[in-house]
Amino acid sequence: MGIRDRLDSYIVSAVNRVKGVTIYPNWALSMAEQERHNIPSMSLPQRQAELYQRLSWVAIAVGHVANEAAGTPFEVLRDIGEDTESIVNHEFEQLLKRPNPTQSRFEFLESTFLWRLLTGNAYWWLNKTNENAPPSEIWSIPSYKIDPVPDGNLYLRGYLYDPGNGNKIMLEPWEVVHFKRFNPFNPYVGMSPVEALATVSVGDLKMQEWNTNFFGKENAKMPGILGFSDPIPDPDWERLQNDVTSQHGGTKRNLMMLRNVGAGGVNWVSTSMSQKDMEFLAARQFNRQEIFDMFAPGLAQWLSPDTTNANAGSGRDALMELAVWPIHQSISETIANKVLPVYGDNLVCEFEDVRPRDRAMVLQEQSAYALVHTIDEVRSEYYSAPPLGDERGTMLVAEVTAAGIRPEMSDAVDESAAQADEQQPEDTAKAKERDQFRRFAQKRIDEGSPEKVANFRFDVLSPPEQLAIQAEYIEITPDYAPLVTKLTEAIETMRALA
Image 1 (tube, rainbow, N blue to C red):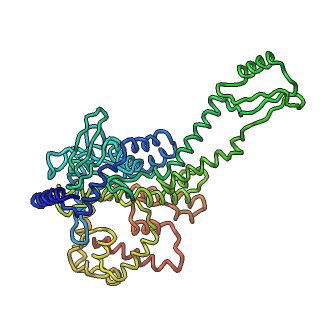
Image 2 (image 1 turned 180 degrees about the vertical axis):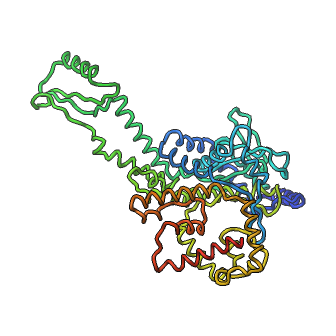
């Protein structure tokens, strides 16, 4: 970098400091200058996206991940110390429900997750009047129509949008939200998983093509050789060749004919292995497994027709923890950094945690936690509930269970509980799940398999609520019964106090 370039850089940096623009270190600006000509061609993400159209394994894998991710509830929260507080119907949540006139929330998020999965990059365009204004619309831009533009003075000059008609548009950095995967060779664009699967994908496409041609154009005819023992005159040989081709050859019949081979009669010699000999199906299954492991680990186990309910559940859990949850984290943190600051300070956002939980383990942890923590601490840790606001919240669960409710407090507690029942009726989803469990449990008992009652999968009820309803049907072992009784009493007391 010459003296003039250094002077220009210094002037730009000084102006940026005055304007409050982010100041990048010199090494980052030098790297940006070097990367100006290293942005991959727009044709690369387009070819990667084409696999979604052409290769069924890729379409299945990324489709399931995107569908699961897009359907997960999303909320905006405010950081308060070490805790967060949910903001009901935040403005950005409302915008996300109808991000633009052409897409619903699910369609919009699905396209975002699909672009990031397929090409390693996803882009939003924010329709807003200036850098500090909240957006009025959000649009998804195809990855193969937009590129970041590195700059040696600004680090990022903006994003170049190419609609395909030759009229390229430069977008400001604050107009675009860029979601990207890690790329070890370029900090401006993400690397697609398809690059690691390029060889496998091409091979599988060729296998599909061969299989289609074999059963379609070639009518499942294996290539081979017809050998004739006798020397056949040329006129007869040409006529014989024409007859074989027209009556038996097919459009792409790989058939060779030999005369005077010295054997008796006419012999057939196959020149191709069968599908079974080539392990064709096994090879395609191996390709499927490799692609699924890259995009959607656990999906193959979940969708396998030979899997059991337990194995299918394990596969779904693996998909949620290893594929859906990480992409949720990446997208939500980028939104928090790039979009939410215009709405206020200390705002974060998150998708509902889809990772599987060992409910029995959670219940055991809660019981151990309750032995040495107050009611308010238990409410905050496991139920995200506010403090009770009086001396009850400072008591240990064991103390409340042992002492019960003081007479002078009983009337107030009864009155508050009655008001709570009137103002906050039982959640419909919880009531529905309780009914589902009771029908499930009664059916297993009627069938003579009461031990299967514990196999019911809860999705809505909290661990204490699960314990309360399971105690009606599940026979508790003598060693575990005292703990269950103690927990049940504590839960009922806490419910009364709440």
